[in-house]
Amino acid sequence: MRSRFSAYVLGLKDYLLATWHADFRPATLSLENGPEWVSLNVLSAREQEYSAQVHFVATWRQGGQWGALEERSDFLKEDGVWQYTCGETHEFPLRPGRNDACPCGSGRKFKKCCAV
Ligand SMILES: [Zn+2]
Image (cartoon, rainbow, N blue to C red; front, side, top):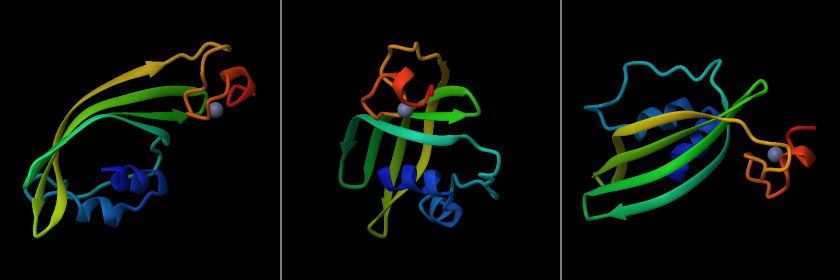
């Protein structure tokens, strides 16, 4: 799952499609004009022999806007490889205050980090 997040960060479209279960994979995937993914917070992960569920929040920024995508993703293992099937997603905007922790995950205050 983390590797798929990294692939979104790096724009590795082929990897994303290759780890997408054939029954659920979109015909095409466009990452152009997408937001910049800045951090990933895995809230929980459950793994069984052939299925797994991951609950995470991924934070993005685009221009001066920030937002988060919360998702419960389902994975199936096929031929020893975890493949993403589908997820229940919830998107919401983030409006960090100047003294809040920066949503990029740096651990610094927003005003001393990405707000500058
Ligand atoms: Zn920052």
